[in-house]
Every structure is written in C-alpha cells, then in structure tokens.
Image (cartoon, rainbow, N blue to C red; front, side, top):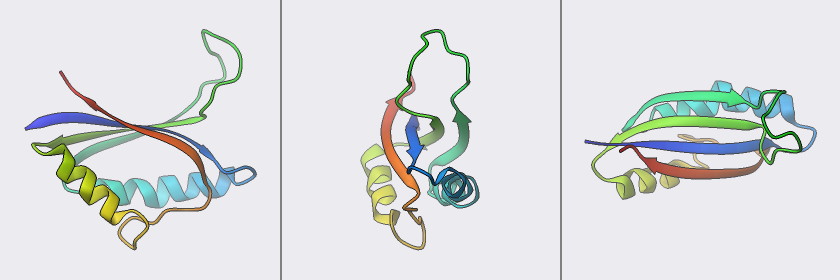
Length: 104
C-alpha cells in the first residue's frame, strides 16, 4: 500500500471567515475522512510569527494522509464526490491549492 499526503492550502472568501471555519471543521473534514483510503486529517492556521515576515498567500493548511495502491482511483472518487451530498462544497471557500505528495 502506498502512502500519500494530500496537502491543501486555502483561504476563506472575503468577509466569510467564520462560515468557512464552521464548514471546514464541521462538514468538510468529515466528508473527506469518509473517502476510502483517507486515514487521518489535520487542520492548521498560519502562526502570527514567521521566519520571513510579510504577506503569506494562504492562511489555512490541511494535511490528509492517504493510503492507496491507485492514486488515480482515489482522485476520481474525490472529484466524483465534490459538490454532492457526500462532499458539500461551501461558497465560503476562497482560493485553494491542493497538492498530492508521495511518502518516500
């Protein structure tokens, strides 16, 4: 079984921070954890203090640990669920950057 990290940088839509955090923590994490192969999820927010000061492009970060022998099958299932009752998408989600990493 191969292990992957699904890393998602994201922001709330302007003026919708509370709605975004409620949706992500109380709905989206559960929806993603229900996909076969997702074994854990961890959600983080940007710390006030950084090594390199200045604006950061994303305020939120989520790490999902995935175990699968077929990453394309997992991606297909993820995209099939997106926007359905099985994985609701909120308009409070602003920009995001999802990336898969293979654990070596």
